[in-house]
Image (tube, rainbow, N blue to C red; front, side, top):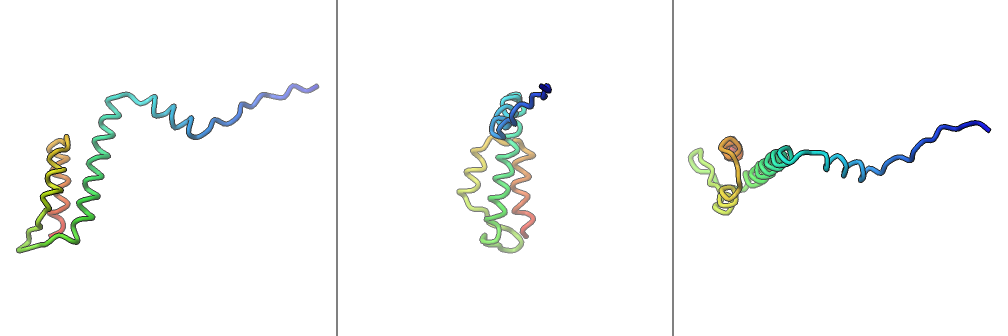
Length: 90
């Protein structure tokens, strides 16, 4: 009898994903969540931009969006990058 090499079965992709996510440290997770939240706010701002009224080069930002933006735990740079979306729409 020949000795065949044992080939372990392929690990399921969900198991691989779970192991990867469990290996990430807490500081990296917090930073990733912060960046993801900022990108979601930017995407929402871009979606709002075409329907917002503009007057004399200024874009009127809805109060509901500003309230949500102020409630977020963002750094000054992240806050300014979200508001810069409205500046580009002039």
